[in-house]
Amino acid sequence: MNEADLLRRLQQANEKYGFVDNRDLSAAVEGEYAIIDGGHVPKIRPASLADLAFATQLDYVLQEIEKQMPGTIEQLGGHDEVVAVDLGCGTMPYAGSLMTVLASINGSIVLYGVDNNPEAIEDFYKGRNSNIGVTAKEGDIEKLHEIMAGYEKDTVELLFLFNPSPKIPFPELKKINSSLTEHAILIGSADGVTYNSPGHYMDGLRANNYRIIVMAHNPFGEMLNTGYWWSPKSFTTLNFSPWFVAVPEAA
Image 1 (cartoon, rainbow, N blue to C red):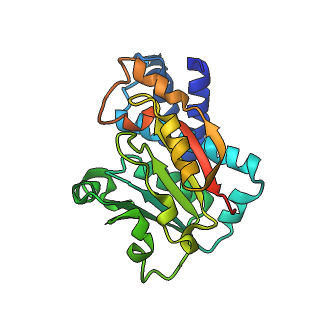
Image 2 (tube, rainbow, N blue to C red):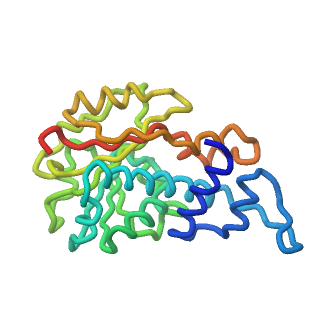
Image 3 (tube, one colour):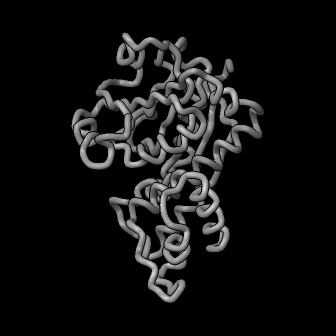
């Protein structure tokens, strides 16, 4: 995908979600300061660009879900509440983007992050994630039903699984209480830049009885090749590629 197409997709999503000023966005994608209306366009914060790129890709994936399963997104919008769980959430640098996009589907979103690393959960609440309405809990994903015990709703509509390392076994999704997730849609991604691991992700889904319905390249990883964009801490989400959507085999 060329620079013009990337910019067009970012601008369309930005008009919908409002992350940055579109004039600044154009200059940033071109990799330089621009003179617009006689003044220099300021450089956009790297985190804002990463947030927008993540939201743009997620928005595209949701459109692909609607093509494969017509009426699904509209149905989620009609629920009184939508429960989403990010499995192996880590520090969840994309939490704000994820909440922004999900809230456009349904204003009553309950988003959990689950990770068995206590340090990750501690770091999760530092900085940008401290006040966006996401609850992060320590625990193994196969004990999700225990982690969510006491919550009034006993089903999960959306599961997220981003960037699981191929250096460790794929999360054992089939050990999650099936009554929680039997109708859930799983959205996630491999790390296509650092590990080139799509096969690990695909094999993991299939081994856990999930059927892949969407596989989508993430073109924003190409931004990592441009020095102007590169910032390891801010752009970790851009290497998420390809993205997958999967559903339990019985669904």
